[in-house]
Length: 338
Ligand code: LMR
Image 1 (cartoon, rainbow, N blue to C red):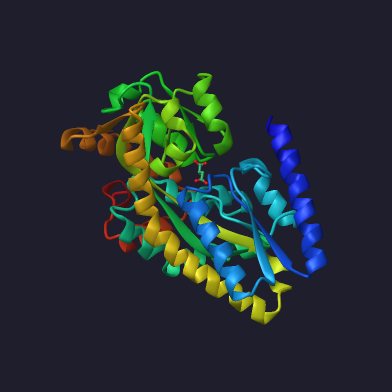
Image 2 (cartoon, rainbow, N blue to C red):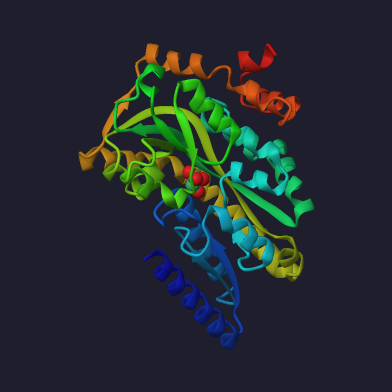
């Protein structure tokens, strides 16, 4: 089924390129792994619309959602090889470009609120992180929010004791591995588009992520409990191939930059609403019970996770972690006491 759907998309993309050549339209292929209805899917759609309008149809962004063409394990190679022109992987997935610093965004409770996240992602720290990708032939164009992550399983996860014996899906990240260990669970790295099946067939017991991803991947049909833990942040870097980007005419490049600025504003202003609506839909489905933590339960999570920043030592510069914590408006005791 998956093979057929990829084949269909490959044929569709080839046909689209053929017709674009015939019409003399420039095509930008933008691949991502999430659903169109998710915050990233919606921001990518907005970008495509703005490009179509502002180029009067001369430049077309072809969106390839849901990992149909390229999943987590293939998309960055596809960008480097020129099989697609744009991606928006989660920040942590960019560390494969010899940029381990991107894993810093996985630290638990890094940002007390979304404004704090924006001070980092939209400020000098975000810009300097994006600039690190350039030496690998990738241009970092923008950072988009999804939002804060929640935790799900088939049992209510209220305190760390509830994690005993569970295996939870994570993105590839030593910090996330340490996070699950600190909570008392095992972790298993899986590609995003494998999560639904892995939960259905019991390969893993639970997962973490923003509610928008939970709902649009139908995980509410596979998980009985969703804890509103807000224990971490998920954001994306919009990236392009450097050779492609520098080969554009200055006019097209500046039109794309403008469209991306506006799409970024839209992304970061609408993601929270999207997550709120997804939570409402999960509640309405009646399939997943939403668990809200008491103050004491929340504290138990924070205490258990307070040692995780130590796992980042040696791999992520201390100045970067401290700089982010300062910018975010708090110095974590765990880090500042190192
Ligand atoms: C994940 O793998 O959970 C996320 O990075 C997916 C996404 O792009 O939101």
